[in-house]
Image (cartoon, rainbow, N blue to C red; front, side, top):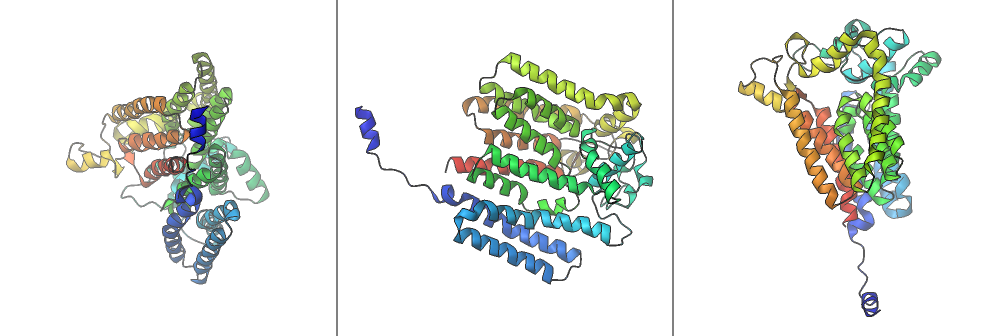
Length: 421
């Protein structure tokens, strides 16, 4: 009783500035460089200066509204992100379908995904298909060698199967489809999932850090293909938080068949569930569900043409010779190539071994760290770290891979910083 009375007499610590206004501070800090980048996008598109100026004024008005009436923060922050992130993507979609151009005004990754869906709708195997003749050769490509995507589909089938119903409906109603529509839907899902994982200010901080990391909108106008797999991983994490482990297994299976590197995040989600007291039997059942879901998606394409599937999604990524992705980008492989350790851009090299070592190091650190501090924000940080580190030592490391790691790390740090403010 004496201890309780003494504790009751302690002065109440007032919340820090970050604790009270962390989401507003994060928005202001990240909105400024994003406005500058979006302005350059408008200049590249030769839009009248009045259009980006109106957008900048709208962002400024929303920020002033947020500061003057803090109760509107949930709406105004979402509106600012919509203007700075989603609006340029909508503009890119309209520009491609309304502006005559000899080039496809969409990134090669997003374009190939919708072409793969088109092949499926026509009853043709998307693995081993000729994407050059299908139109991908017109997509912007800034490298010194022909786009490997013209002849190889590196992603697993979830990437083009999940948007397939929307693609079929859009082509039936409007006569066209743009993969970035599905990517925007995935972005909305990520926004809602971050809000569910981190209610209130930490969720808004995490979402702002994720979408307004400088350069994200620049890549999004071409098509950020990592958004669907991130949404599925966040949904699996949310299911684990609510102890719906069979649902977690289903979502992890869907994430794996969307992009192979989702496999890197599975041990992190399972570790987080384990350190929270989930028994081995429950985890094993979830693992069986995950395997079953992945097998259900992969089996039809293996039966269709196993050689083409393996050549596109395995040999092309880690092999050597003419069926290997040429080393490029700014990761370890490019460093070794420029240093003469690797002699040719298509030479074989044990990148898979390096990826396993990098992944093992992060998984081990995650096991040690999460056993000491069970915080869901740390899982996001560790996801970003494992993606960035493994992709850095892979055959190629591009700006999209860097963005995938950075946006998850920043989202986790933002939510975690608010918790400790």
